[in-house]
Image (tube, rainbow, N blue to C red; front, side, top):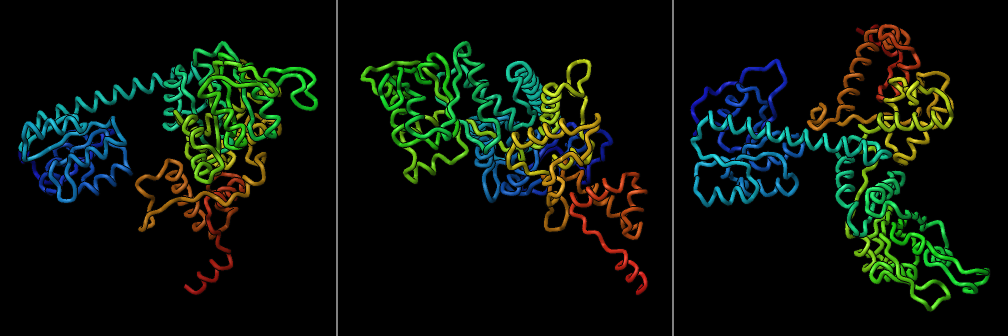
Length: 494
C-alpha cells in the first residue's frame, strides 16, 4: 500500500490541471488513494478497475501519464503495457506492483515502462518522478511541434495543414525524401497525392532534375507505352520520327504515376523490368536504354484487392509498395479547413487581382455561418472540392465578408450536421470541438425558440441575428421546428 491518504475527493482546482493521469488498478483502496494524492497536487485523474476498462479509456482520451498495476484479474500490467506500446511509444507509463523483483523490473523496462514502483511506495518520490516525466514529455512534444512548424513553413510551402494526421504525413515525407526507395501514395480522389509526390521530389537529391507526372488512366495502353518508353522512327503508323519517352526525360529525376492501378498488364510487365533492371527498350527498337529514375506511384483504388482479383501483378505491387504514404480525407482533418480556406483565398485573390491587402494576402473571410457550413460538410471531393468552392467565392464576393449565399446550393441544402450521442443522449467522451460547439448552439437556439412560442422571427430578434442566419442554423443543426398552431393548441389544453 502507498502512504496513507484520506479516501475523499481531491480538492477542485480553479486553474488548468498539471496533466491528465490514468490509474489502472483492481484494488479500490489503491485507486482512491492515488486519486486523492494526485488530485491534491493539481492533476486530473481518471480511474479504471481493470485492464480492459483502462484500454477503453486510453482509446477515448489522451493522457500525459499512465499508472498500471502489474497484477490484474483480466490481464497483467505487462501485457497491457505491450499492447499500448504497439500503438503509442511516447506516453510515459509507470508500473506498480506488490510483487517486486529485479527480473520483473527488467521485463517491465524492456516492454517499454518509463519507471517501476513497488508497493508501498514513497508518495514524495512518486510525485517527483511523475512531475519530472510529464515535464520531459511536454518539452519533447513542444520541440517536435516546433520542428514540424518550421519544416512545414520552409520545406512544404504548398502543403497546408496542422492536424496531427497531416503532420505525421509530413514527418514521413521528410524521412523518405532523401532515399532512393519507390513510394506508393494512397488516398481518396482530391486529397493531394501529386502534391505529396512533388514535395518528396523537391526535398530529394534529385530536385535539380526532372519531375515527370504521368496520368496513367487518361492514355490508351499503346500510347502510354510510347509515352513512357519512347519509340523509333517507323515503330508504328504515324511514327515519322524517333522520340524519347518519359523515362529518358526523367533520367536522374523522378517519374510519378497517378492512378497506377489503371495500367494494362503488358505495361505492368515493362514497368516491373524498369524497376528491377533500370533498363527498357523503346518501341520498335532492339537497343537497351539504361536510366536512373525514382518511381513514385499513387492510387485511390485498393491495389491489394486488384492483386487478389488478378487485375494487377503481385510482384509489381510489392515493388511499388516499399513505402506507403496514406493521405487522410478532408472529413478526418476538419481542423485544417480554415487554413486551407485562407490559402485558397490568397491564391485566387492574386489570380483575380481583387481583395488583396498591402502584404499581397487575401482580405476576404467567410462569415461564421458560411465557415460552419464548410466545416460540417463531408467533402467527398476532398481538398480539390474545397478549392473549387473557395475559387467560386472569390469570383462572386462583393465585399471582404463572404456570406453563405455565395456557397453552392448543394452545400446550403445539405442534410445538416450529425451530432453523435451515447446511450444516455449525451455527447460521447471523444466528442470533437465542432460537436461540442454545435450541441451548445443547438440547445441555445431551442431555448429561444421555445421561449418565443416557436416564432423564428422573435427568436432571431432575441438572438440578435438575421432571420436568414437563424434559418440556416436550424437546417444545419437538424432542429425540427414546431408549428405555432401546435403550440397554441397545447397551451389551450393546459
